[in-house]
Length: 267
Image (tube, rainbow, N blue to C red):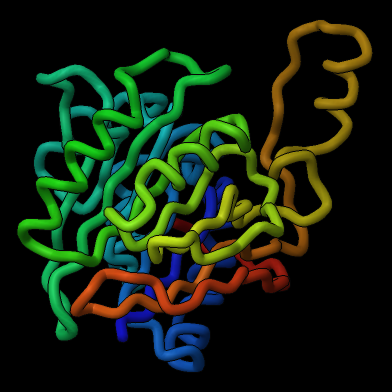
């Protein structure tokens, strides 16, 4: 059995620090074999830099997924082709820097990860994630049955539909983007584990990891405002999935949710 830990959107320095504090102990305690994180909000809440990506990989993260903020840091596009463990959504047009899937060797066999972006209420509107993800998953299955999908999307309906569409083809589908962890973890009929949104690794007392007051003002008066990253106690959210390495079928899924006291660091 392969145990995969997936952590939802890391928001800013507080989220990065908390993940660094959380990972070593949790991996040892839970016997985690493989770690995936969504890092698209890790650089000040918008995008990810090469430096931050390297720091996450050094923590023991195997793969970093992204989403609609993947291009927000200007030095990432030139870096993506050099580091296959950082994924951008698979359904960008051919020729886009980077890649949307990767296969890595582990002591328990090969593990594939797919990063795909949904379309409903999302910008930019990319290629059909259903067709692209299915095509890629079928291709990857010729090399490994263990396939994990980060479905980065706004609506519960689209992410749930995608999971059912891929049921039995991939091992797990976990949603990201809303920063709010859902309570619908389940094993679908054909053996695919599913959680509609893994949540975030960001400040608990916040609005989606950002300071509360500016966002409230924006809703009240509609005027432009900066949304600083919130600080304080960080909630680590994600999912722990057990997968049979010989069949790729999920045996168990459970939500992860832990609170971490804030620390300071200079990364």
